[in-house]
Length: 243
Ligand code: HEC
Image (tube, rainbow, N blue to C red):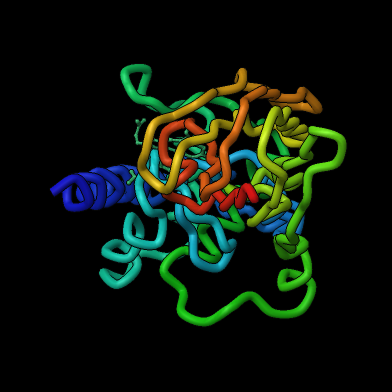
C-alpha cells in the first residue's frame, strides 16, 4: 500500500515536471554536464541510508525504493531527463511535512546526484566502467576483542554496514567502540541472541564521532546493530560470539 502511494506520488510529480518542461521553463533540469561518478558517490554517502537503489547498491528503507518510484513513469515513456528534474526538485525542496531533510546536496552536487539517480533508477543490470568502481565495495571482516575492548567501525561511505560482520570476545567486561567516519548518523547497540534483551545502546554519531557501549557478558551469541530506523533492516548488524 505504501509502495503504491509513493509510486503514485513520483508519477504525479513527473507529470507536473513534464508539463513545465513542455512549457519551456525546465531548461536546467537535463543535467548535461553532470558528473555521474560523483553523483553516485554522493548518493551512496548522503541518500543511500534511506533509499534503495539497486545500481548504487544501497538498501535504505526509510524513504521510497527509488527503482520502484520511477519504474512506472519510465515505462510510461517519460525521459530520464524529466526524472532528473523530479529528483533535483525533491533534493532541494522536499515536502516540509515529510521526513526527508532538504538540501543534503546543493548546486552542482545536487545536479550530479539527480542525474545519477535518473540514469540508474529501474534500469536492469549493473553499473559498468568508471561507475562500477565509483564506490568501494563494503568489505566486512571479523574482529576480536583485545584487553576488554572491541572496535566495530561504521562503513566510511555511509553505507548501511559496519566494517565488521562478526566478532569474538572472552566473557567478562567489554567496551565496544564504533567510530563513524561518514556523514550518515549511526550508533551501536548490543542485544542477546538476535531478538533478545537490548543490553546497551551508544550515542548517535557522525563525521568521526565514536559511539561506545560497555557491557559485562556471559558466554553466548549476541547481535550488534544500529538502532536508527531502517539501518538494521538494511544490513547494519553483525554477530558477537562470547566464549
Ligand atoms: C533521512 C532519510 C532520507 C534521506 C537521507 C534522503 N531521503 Fe529521499 N525521501 C525520504 C522520505 C521519507 C521520502 C518520502 C517523502 C517525504 O517524506 O518527504 C523521500 C522521498 C524521495 C524522493 C521522491 C520519491 C517518490 O516516490 O516520490 C526522491 C526522488 C528522493 N527522496 C531522493 C533522495 C535523494 C537523491 C537523497 C540524497 C540527496 C535523499 N532522497 C535523501 C527520506 C530520505
